[in-house]
Length: 424
Ligand SMILES: NC(=O)c1ccc[n+]([C@@H]2O[C@H](COP(=O)([O-])OP(=O)(O)OC[C@H]3O[C@@H](n4cnc5c(N)ncnc54)[C@H](O)[C@@H]3O)[C@@H](O)[C@H]2O)c1
Image (cartoon, rainbow, N blue to C red):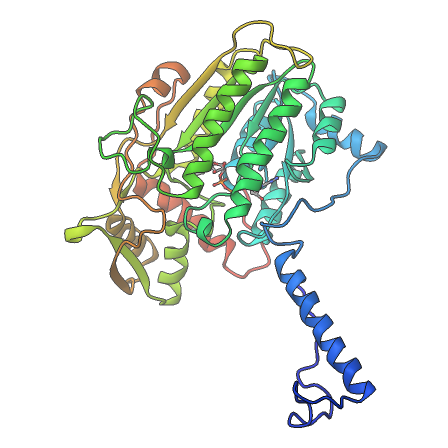
């Protein structure tokens, strides 16, 4: 982020003469005073509306023109073995990159969209984009709130499916930047659905909800039939809102919509804000890691799900999605509306996650056990996946130790500092 270039000291003015109580300010002092005031006002606006902040209103991105359209068409072209033309939102994100590559590998046409916000290191997103680029996937830099851009995309390509993964993720960050959750997870989702409902043909939509919708529930494993009205974070509340919004668009406009509740996804090219990722970083640098525990030293546990299993679940959802029934913004009959858990069905205590990492990294962690703060995290997650098994053919096969081994292998290569970049 660039800095405002303010001098560190205000010229040769002596502070005692520059008193706010002085009634005899000379003109150059008034100018200096107003300049400083203006700089402070500008600084305030810069901080509040910094273009790289994920809370900022949509940036203006460059898109359009014949060259751009031909890139879009070429990337969206279905190759041998493929069937779908898919718009993947959040394509430079962790899950989005893996799903886009898997679709492209089997011949589907793919167009990515991502706003490359700086919620976490944007360089990682750009490196993921380079991987997509090498596979012939064009990722457009743009925001899902940009109606004109989305309409243009649907004009150029009659998408059969939208894989909607763009979102403001993270549970704790919601206390710091709540509006970014409303911007991406609510306003952005509605904008996307508005464009999809008016498209002709309407695409089928598969989108990422979250296990966090189970909130404060204590009955395990979590089933899709369980209540989801007690979210523990704003993130969870926006995902829950997304599920209700999906219902509305399905009901009014005949959009076929499938929501996938992911359970703590991990793996190569993962997200630096997630515990397995920053624990690895801190263990290697000797920095202390804080491990949260519940009342009476109860361990916090997560149903860690390996990225390749999640990708199979996403593809299964796309493959089984029925067509939307509306056209030109009008419903022509009832359409499919589904929601599935995509988890691993075996919760692992976070302490166990740390000992696996210690073993793989061959470094002892500097651990500190702490009571879990009430900042949105829940004590445990555990998925019942029988619906996804039955209807999507979803069957996770990677245990935490195997998956972390692949993650650590990637991590060491990617951050080795060598010029050679890790690739798929
Ligand atoms: N990774 C997990 O453990 C997990 C768990 C549950 C749910 N999810 C959901 O899965 C989806 C993918 O998660 P991820 O882990 O890949 O996260 P991610 O942050 O790596 O990917 C999301 C991408 O969306 C982009 N984005 C955000 N707002 C946007 C906007 N307004 N317009 C365009 N692009 C925007 C971001 O730049 C980012 O690249 C998200 O919807 C997330 O909420 C993830």
